[in-house]
Structures are given as C-alpha cells and as structure tokens.
Image (cartoon, rainbow, N blue to C red; front, side, top):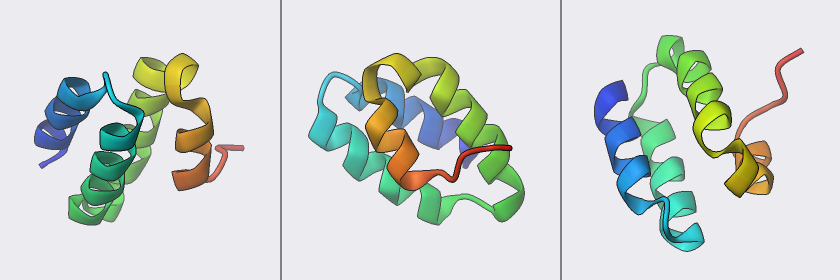
Length: 62
C-alpha cells in the first residue's frame, strides 16, 4: 500500500488541494510501521513545495 500511496501523491502533486486530500487519505491506509518511512519520503520529495501541509500532518522527527 505504501508504494500505491506514493504513486498517487506524485500524480496529484501539481495541485495543493489534491495533494493534501490524498496525503490525508493515504495516511489512513498505511500501517503504523510504514508511516515513518512515508514521512521521510514525503519531506524529501515535497518538502520544498508543500512544507506547511506536511508539517500539519506529520509530527516533527526529533
């Protein structure tokens, strides 16, 4: 499921609204063990473009 959610986010990354909606949905589908890897990937791929959205849905990693 992790790879599926990543694919969807890449396809909708042109739209802030769609990106946020799909990120929220994707987090519901993932297992807790996948969330950390997904968070890291999201910040690496979309951190410059959608940092405020990512910060809203992920706790900062300390």
